[in-house]
Image (cartoon, rainbow, N blue to C red):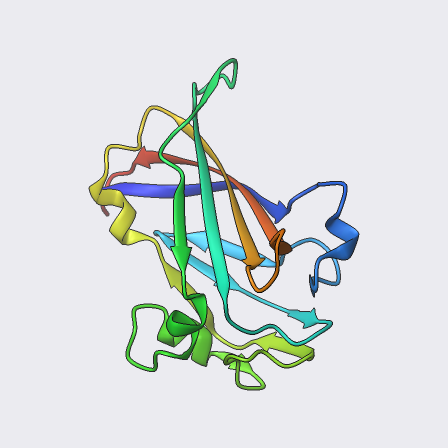
Length: 165
């Protein structure tokens, strides 16, 4: 069986990180195993977040020794509030697990993860093993030009084969 391995996950270190309107009180608090990511703790939203929102996923495929990396199919998702507010959608259990209720427009305040789980099993269908994957997930408000970066998550992952017991 293939298993996703989360090696590093953190808020991106960028010059404007202090201006992000989604803030974590310290390092991102999560556990990972059997292709399941569990989020713990809380985060703060410092101002109202509303559509139009855009998420850009920028994956880089790297050699296992990290000596070389290449951009691998950048993905742009629009209408992010549609996913957040969809009570029957793929991510609905994750968004419903936060308190207070997490929905667009997202109000300023502190939100707590309560049994917040993301299942990454879907990704085991792709040939990701043999590489390290570095990705940035950037959330933007596209209400004005230039668009405003609201948050950025940086992750480094790999895929490995594990024996089922």
